[in-house]
Image (cartoon, rainbow over all chains, first blue to last red; front, side, top):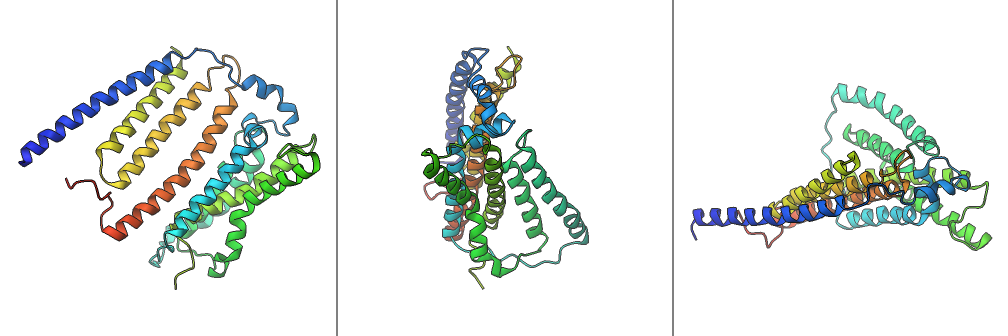
Length: 227
Length: 102
């Protein structure tokens, strides 16, 4: 088969593919457009139970209270993904380059502000958009910025202290769930009046874990196992 | 047609665009990026359709599901990138063995 034939075949293949995908997009668009224009969904049921949720932001209430299982398992997914990355090898040895003064200055200004912002987002999540995931990703960005500026954390921290922080979120979640299970027989069924405090406790632990897990994923391997 | 449906259709478009790139490109980094674009399309559909509550705040349940989905997508992407680097280290090429050379 000549190169020209092959190119023509590739063109035919792409055209057929495009046609099939247009049919798929048309079908999906038809399904979306045939949905009713107004649907309250579960928002009324959420609004009705907001008083017992312990927070006033409905998204946080759904994440940490009404559908706490989702968030619990999501923390587990983060850990499993990190296990997968670690099982593939150790972190690449970064070239130690002298960072430019502009980057060093920026890191010095930005990292404390990002820490502050992570704390604010964690606290604001109870009443406004924010919460553990947003705070955790800002925290991760701060740590990645530090790594990019060649500011490494001490290697001795990459042993069990790192692992403790990684499982802190999942551990706090399971500990609260297990305590509640033994106290009132229902997993993650917060008692009245305690819900707000428990949610903040879980979210604080989850923020640390999410931030450190994402930064560890950025390293692309198990840290400290080489050299 | 209200703007929620416009955003949802945009999500359908992103999904299809990502699917096209996923099939056409052989390089694994492009495939991973394509899957991310597809995921963003799905998230956009979910968030947009959660807004079909006239005069009331949007349905928080799809929004919470999307936040969960974003975190899962990030961890899956990180694992996929690590796998891609592993394939590259083993074979010298960041593409699957059954993909023929272009």
